[in-house]
Length: 475
Image (cartoon, rainbow, N blue to C red; front, side, top):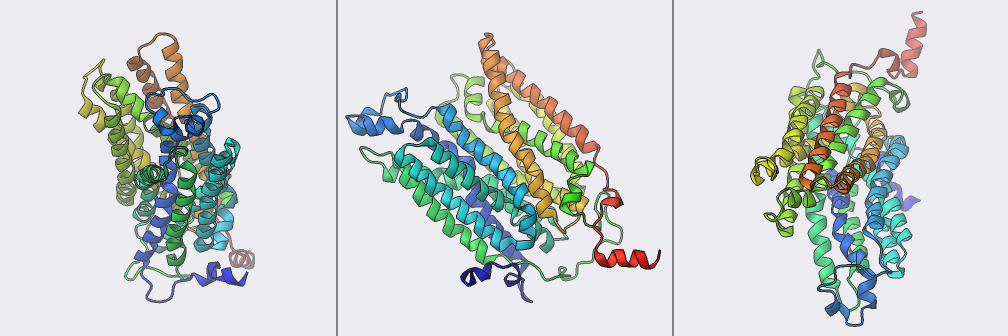
């Protein structure tokens, strides 16, 4: 379509004088929008009481004091799958369309992300209106999940090409937006639902429609602003090191070839273990701190704790990825796994059955969350170091299937261990000790995988037709 030709990659090539510092804000506008996924839990209770409000004869006056959902309402366990489906589809869509993205360019991918993410909200609004949960699974989970996957990887390879001198810092600037998206999405959703609330409507459907429209417009800023550098472009005054650092290649590997390397699968394990362990804190943060310090932490204070963790999750993405530019990606992950294992081991001891120190527990969890976020932001630069820049976005997309696995494995592991221990009569404080010590084991697995990462064998390097002809000519 001629009207959409501005989305073509050749229409987004930067002209001389374009500032590369405009690209991180473009990427950030996408990630701050799709990062709303971390705030989806604010919809769970309204969705759980949806039919109760619509059928209660006294309208909203009947809501206070109600402590159980209507028989027609959706259960929390059913609603929990909305987020899990979205994360699974995020990883799968990033893997499936990563190679297309490299050819189509970031502008077209960002536009597709915005359309899918907004459409997911609109379809979910219909699901709320007709009270069909499968429509919300389809809307927010599948269609919106595709938007998450395309939006997450769309700026990565572009940022790495614009910042060959600081790839960790560049990707950290964008990916920190995903960690901080909940800081915008949570109050936005809460205020919109309060504004749309009436005697017979909690305002969830209208909030979905409004948020879909708002996020689409915000993401268009990224679509219109992003540019790709011209072939051969380098930052002014920057000269590539004559001798690259260890593990940093000057060659490139095509995505299908990278998928068959042991390095790819070692990094898959590295990301999966780091994410699974981080979700052990993030997914259970509010009930965990209330149960470890029973009677001392209110629900409101627990909500503040969750918000604090979101801040550290966001900050860690920028800080750790920037640090990795100086100490190397492999060393950065060594810090994550060694320090993380120590902190996970100490975390339950900070509770009632140990030191009984709320500040210590909060501090431990905050540091853990910086490394959880830092793992997401550092992995694209790690991939760039090993596989080059040619198709790093597509390789990153396939690696995000590790996130899909962790998005299911982490919450299931934490919740099932907790419930099993509870059913055996184990106090919740001791049940969390078991959960967190299992996370220590996962981090040790990640530590071993990271130690096995080595330079990619030359047989996997991409060889252009020109290189092949030169080789044949000298044979």
